[in-house]
Each structure stands twice: as C-alpha cells, then as structure tokens.
Length: 118
Image (cartoon, rainbow, N blue to C red; front, side, top):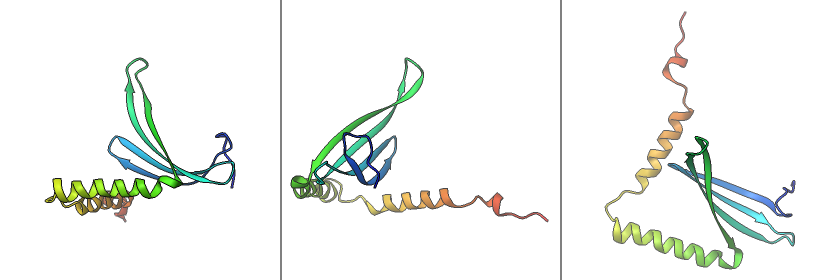
C-alpha cells in the first residue's frame, strides 16, 4: 500500500456519505507504529463572496480505538432516542428507499438513449 504525505500516516479505508450540501468522510488511517484510528470529516461547500467562487469548510473528529465502543454506544443511543421517543411516526426506511431510487435513476440511461430509429 502506498504511503501518502500525511506525516507518515497511511489511509487504509474510506467511506463517503453525501447528505444534501454536506459530505461526510469516514477514513481509517494508520500511525507510524501500525496502530489505527478513525477520522470523521464533515465538508460543507460555501460560497466565497470575495472571489465569487466556492470553498469547502471542513470539521474533523479523530476517534481512537479505545473509544470506538463508547462512541458507537452513544451514537446508537442518541439515534434510537430520536427515532423512538421524538419521531416515532417517521418511517426512516423510506429515506433509504428514496436514496436508492435516486441512485438507480442516475445510473439508468434515459429513454431517448434507448430508442433506435431505423
């Protein structure tokens, strides 16, 4: 595996989640001593008034192996509280179905490209 130029830290695995105007990156990295940690990065696209272009605002969390279980437990407890106590009538599975439909439609050829004119 090729080592990047990030102070000797090697990126091992990465997942990206697009959520509206935000993108979340979940990256597993290794230390020089072959230990592993997780970075969670939130990236937001922002309009820059000065040069009329776009910049990306990033916030990063470092999560170390000794905190994985505590972090996951707290995250699961918090999400479950929202789902069961605060929003019990919301069908959270419908969000996944909506996303899957959008992804399928984006990959499918348009009707015009399938038509053959002889």
